[in-house]
Length: 187
Length: 295
Image (cartoon, each protein chain N blue to C red):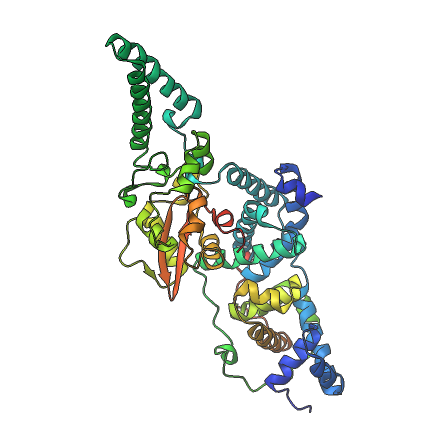
């Protein structure tokens, strides 16, 4: 088994393992970071962390689950180390306990196929909402896993995912690209 | 115009979509056409987020470089288990050299004593004394390491991690590790991990930290350690995540001296502090997995 070989010190096996999961790890970091430059640094940290902690993988979960969990933590911490602070939040999302007057989201139109539109929408979510949504919808973690990764109660995971999605729906449904806003990748 | 969903309905719909709703909640959602319509809206949003970012944005050269860097890091980590094991051992810590030194001392002592006209019993006693003296000298050279002697380990705060014997090293050095396990001079009756550790390193103020990250920073300041320096010394670099995970999940409690006795030599540099009501132990050697295997 590839993982066993990598754990035993087989560098070729580890290389194969990392290549196999690279794209998804990159995707997680890309969604969490919001731009290519930060995502690249976070991905590097994630890969190093996975390689160095491989001996701790005990096979109780799928390797991919474990790897994405490690990668997510590495990405989030790398972003924290870089001093990234939550983007200015949506007014209705700034406090956890103040539920906004909920409105039904508009249909998510074709515009959201635009990469920049998705990035823009996700960037408008504060980290505490973006991370659980990404972990759920991109990585496919269940609430318990997300709770573990983010060190928050499962009930909070549930509410943050719901509110994050609701806000995304509103953003995407109403999206009008801001001509003044430059994507860091293209600045 | 449909009524907006309440926040609780939002959560209900979201949880249903994720397969995380309770049986009662499932019944409630499926009985409501409005809520089921919201499930579809939720699905549209989730599919957008779940779409992989542009695969074309992955630079193959960067991918190769990053994977190469990770492979190199894994090699470094695999070769190093702790500061103590990674540091070059002085000659007196080499098993063969230690035995040779004792034999040499005996060889010198026997003719010397014979020339002085001592009896065989005297020779045996002197040889034994010299051997003990060699051990004691080695212990002194090792910065007060008491594993090979019955001497109380004095002023542990003055020790650096290099002075801590690795358990395997100690065993190879003539069973000293067994003695350390049976009579660890540094451990006192009623001792616990926190107080023991606290004597190994100088205190920084009261060792109270707001966060584990602060504790790690203090540790780095205490040891003068930078990731680069630690790597140069062969140590596994302390990174905040790792230390936090270790401290929270494995070293967050006060453990009894008995637990430490067997494994103390694998610990390496540590810092003890408190975060809130918890005692945290930050270890540069990252050996908590071995120290507390059942955690």
